[in-house]
Length: 416
Image (cartoon, rainbow, N blue to C red; front, side):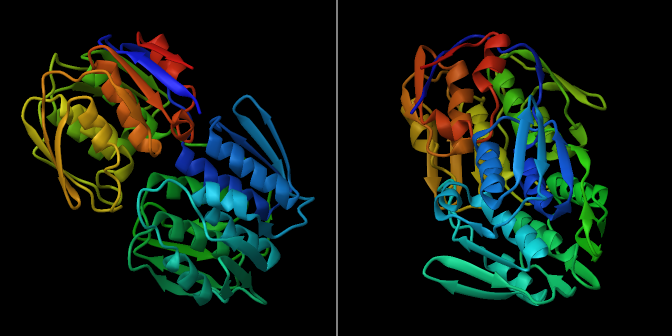
């Protein structure tokens, strides 16, 4: 179990090249199992979750090679359709393999998924949709057993625009007979990235980024080369790290158009932003202003994944901010740790009232999940004294070389 040691009070200023998106690369790596050939995935971040996904591919019989940020997957030797329980328990996103394996093998066996303990994330939407595409599903003793003699396109309406369910439907439908229409589909940029990758393999997927996605089934998919989109959550985290310390930062390899809600909130808090096609320049004031209310919502609303790092900003802003968490019911696990550092936060149900304080104090804190861990890093950078953050392996699930990037921008940070 690693720890990050941060001596706060230094301005975070400089330049960071943002990594590829965790939430895009995982379903894209899963999608490679459907290719009849070799896929080359570029801008692939070195993350714990990516390593676990590579391991899933290898245990299915695929050959996986990494050189720098390029991962090559050869699925021609794939011989298995099962994902073992230990990998499913470690990483909830492994459920995305379900649609891809069914599409290739017409059967799949997986255990119920795990992941960060941020609340209930039922997969009933996934299973209901797969049944509508002709998949027979049996749930026995914690395992999901799927078979499909023939995949048939259909009209699927999602009760909630679930990212994972939308991805699983897309993966199952690309090689189904006929046309599949997904209404109330998730609109996240990562959905667009997956659709673009599938189309590069010969799929016919249309409407990504809108609420209706249409998939015309094809007989098979071929290998392809593809570059993963920038990670908008990582980009916003580094903007938060610089903003809370009053620094100036330039982010390269970003897409500001994917970050509208987050950039809007930063602007309200008093930072100056200048955006170009693939970069963001930010200058922060000495002290941030509060935001009246932040509500997490599906895209294009404010992302639940950045709620906790931005709560650290509010903890030191002038005035009172209110956070309303509409996606996950247990995503305030970072609050107790921020309070340990001197933050004034009161939680009631899915709402948190944050009264800004002038100073935070260094303390020994624990990262209990990925984004909550990132919020502690943001807070520690501005706190007086030294903060020790344990549970670093959770942060590494989504951030590549976070201490190196922050060190290069002036942070006093080390790992033990």
